[in-house]
Image (tube, helix red, strand yellow):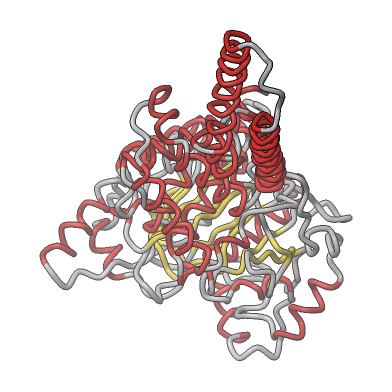
Length: 512
């Protein structure tokens, strides 16, 4: 098995064969270029190369084109002759083959359902998903703290919604402990949850949650599994898309053990439409992405960002992307020219050509490339003809896709939703218990009042020989006891009783 991935090469005026060293593939990468310049094919041939090297990959299929990885290319394909000619030019013995693909889909239509829990997503990413203000994010953090302290599992959206109801009803008490918890902020979060739910985000949260080991897998022949997330429908909710992928990165970072500098990555993660991750992102989130990108390589994970322009990626993250394939950038305006020159300045110059001119002039299926060399040193920029793919170019038919899903080794594991006892059910149970206690208190008060009425009625017919002083003492004693009972029962029935019934946890929550 080779320790490199062949990217491409060329004839006269082009580079010698360009290869990516597997041992540096966890130093991350960038695939950039304008629409229609060949980014998707580059992503496809990299996925093929990693799979053949025994490295699992995860990628999102934004346009539906990458499902063809599950099928072999063929001689009957209309571009077959062009592919063979290019293969000959760059010195490639092109062999058509299919790859071990697992399809995933947040909506469960075009692949196995893919889920996480609210607790695993965490307040920072949820705040990003819900587009919350700083104050609203603070209230969300309070809700998560309450759930942690009281052992309330947050698995799906109804768990979070139920907890937020309680937080709103008990905002005064919580404000004393955690600072201002405004009911208006709780309401705003609830409204944003409804928006996400209407976009299908409720399908993301629940169980069974994704087991990462099902993605970090190889087939019987030792080839890395190609995990493809159907994202064509998901792209209609860009924040949901970006937040989900960022959660996956974070989960990989937090779950996988340190492996140092492996001979090849444990997993390669392709983040298509990467600009969606950074558009209007708060600094705290960008800092988190930078931290993950810097440290996750020691977990054996390589991350490749795919975007139209390198300027879409913050400089601190861009500087960590060692392996680069830059397709054409067009320069029609002054801003375009400035961005093109900025992109060119990030490469090691090649004395044979001007980098900015090359980035502007390369055609579809061509690119300027720079791969990390021995000792992790960036190679000089080269013009490169990208190799043709071995798998089918373009999407599978709907029938072929269903056949691949039906034959999957994971069929039946994620399809049925598991709704186990969690925050919603626990809060509902406590609410029912509190309501029952309030009803019993009210019944006790009514019984006491009835007993008092009977007592007074009996006194009117009682023998008048009883002494006045004795009567007064008895009356005072009964009156005092009755008033105390009234106060206690009134408190249970009134303020405190309502808090137990409506707030659910007023006493029970704190008493556990």
